[in-house]
Structures are given as C-alpha cells and as structure tokens.
Length: 271
Image 1 (cartoon, helix red, strand yellow):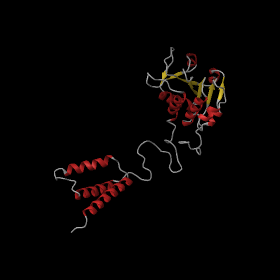
Image 2 (cartoon, helix red, strand yellow):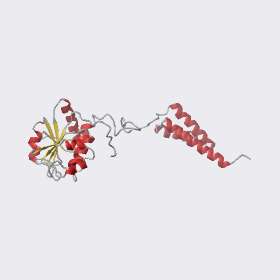
Image 3 (cartoon, one colour):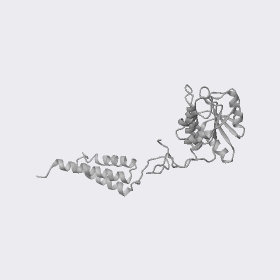
Image 4 (cartoon, rainbow, N blue to C red):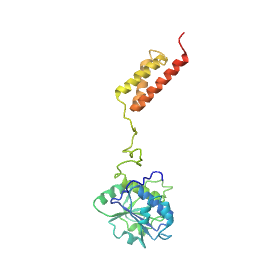
C-alpha cells in the first residue's frame, strides 16, 4: 500500500499504550491500529468491544498494522485495563463537571516523552464512537486532553484522535520525514529538497546574470539607458531570492541559449 515499506523494521521502543473503551465497530479498531503504527504506538487494549473479539473487519481495516490488532488485549472493564498504568490521559472534547487538569495534545506529547523516558507506563484513553468517555471513566484518568478544534464541530473519530495523539508523541522521536524508497532516502527535514544537486555558487549565479543580460541586451530588452540599471537590479534580485541550485542554473542557461538560437534563425542569414 502507498506509504508503507514492509522491508523496514517496526518502531517498537517504549511508548504509550492505547486503550479503547467500549469500541463499537471492528473497522474503527482497525483504523485506530493503523494510526498507531504511523507513529510508533504498538500496544492496544480493548475494553468490552461491542462486536466481540477477534474481529476480522478490524484486521482488514488495519491496512497492514496486523501485528497491533493480533496482539490486542481484551478486558471486561476499564479499571482492569488500567491497573498496571502509572499515568493515564483521557481524551475528550466535552467539558466535565469535575476538578481535573486539562491540557492540549501538544502538552500531552511533551509530558508523555518525559514520563516514558523515566520508565513510567502511560496510557492514552479513548471513548466510544458515539459519545466518548463517561464521567466515571474520565475520573480514572490523571489528566484530560482536549484538542483546539472548531467548538461547533468538535467530534473527532477514534482513528483521527489516535492519529493526533500519536503524532504529538512521536514527532520528537522521528529521525526523518516520510518514507524511504529504493531510489531515495527519507527526507531529513523540511525545506526545499535538491536531490543530486546543490545550491549554486555565486560564480555560477553571476555567470548566469552575465549570460542573460547580454542576450537581453542584444534582443533590445533594455529600452532606455535610464531604466537599464533598475531593470538589471530587479532581474538579479528576482533570481537571488529563488536560491537557485547548480542544476537550475544550467537549465536556465540552456533555455536562454535555445531562445537565442531560435531568434537568430528567425532573422535568417545576413544579406
């Protein structure tokens, strides 16, 4: 499937585990497992899944994250699923009539990394598809996590919620962006990607300026000597802002040369 490299080892280091309280559809469990796999979460616990377990639809919907679905543990109630945890994050969009700290997913990600690094077992708790977690279930958690969403449409499905929390957990652990392919390594960071080339040297850039301005001069581009200096500066600044690569400089010079040859041919031989 797109974006999946089955030759790569799975990231199975210490990580928060995911607890789904009373999930309803097997498909939602499977897509949640897929979201977990995207961001290095690999331990799944299910509390009384409505349609029973194992569930073939969950396996199909996991889109390759089968090891998470197959390794999921099932519990009859939420306290049993959380009994060995040191810290629990309850995800919910609704305000609760209780005194409990509320943090954002980003703050939760920072906190999880600290806790896991010092050996604590932490869990991300998600509720039912239709109405989330009950107040009693939230009371078993240490903190509430609420995302900054549109208050008029705040509901997030299970897979989306797991994806959001997984991203905030994993983003500081990631050593690259995206997927590695047989042809190219995964991207090492954001920004302009320049495979098989490099940023142009000033010598190459200035050579292009000389070439371009010479041909423009021959073509009559600079209409008056009065405007010529300003036009040259504007052209140079435009190309400097582009941060051209060596390959792009060669391509631009090739285009200028091609246009020049075409122009000369159109003029025909001198009489």
